[in-house]
Length: 138
Ligand code: SF4
Image 1: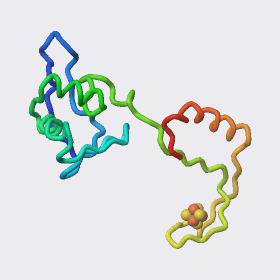
Image 2 (image 1 turned 180 degrees about the vertical axis):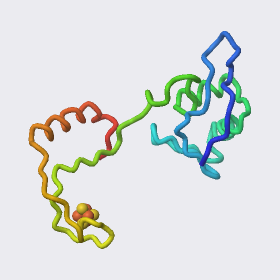
Image 3 (image 1 turned 180 degrees about the horizontal axis):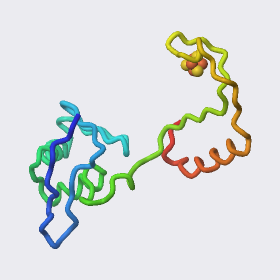
Image 4 (image 1 turned 120 degrees about the vertical axis):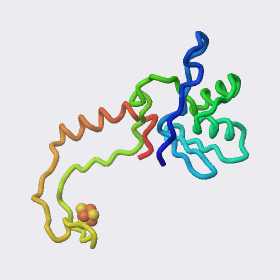
C-alpha cells in the first residue's frame, strides 16, 4: 500500500524532533504492521487511531507521539530510512548443483554449470553475517 504524504509533526517547533510515521509500515484496512519490530497495531488497540490519524496527515498529541515513537511507529523526520533496516533472512547458495526437478524451475530442465563457492569465501560471508545474529530469523 502506498502511504499518504504526511507532514512532520512539530517541524517548526524548537522542542522535540519532528516525528513522522515509520516509512516501512505495512498499512492494512484494520491493522498496521511494522516489519522492523514485528509489531502489529490493530483497530481497537491503544495508539491505533492516533497512528492512523498521523498516516492520514493529521496530528496526534505530544504524549501520544512519544508513546508511538517509543514503540517504533513514529520516527524522527529526515533520518535516512536505510539506517533502520534489519537483516532478517539470508539465502546463501554455496553451489549451483541441483539434482531436484521442481516443475516451476528452469534449472530442472536447463541445469547450470556446476560451481562450488570456495570455502574461504563461504566462511568469510558466514562470519560477516554473524554481526546480524540479533535480527536474523533464518
Ligand atoms: S530445481 Fe530449481 S527450485 Fe528446485 S531445488 Fe533445484 S534449483 Fe531449487
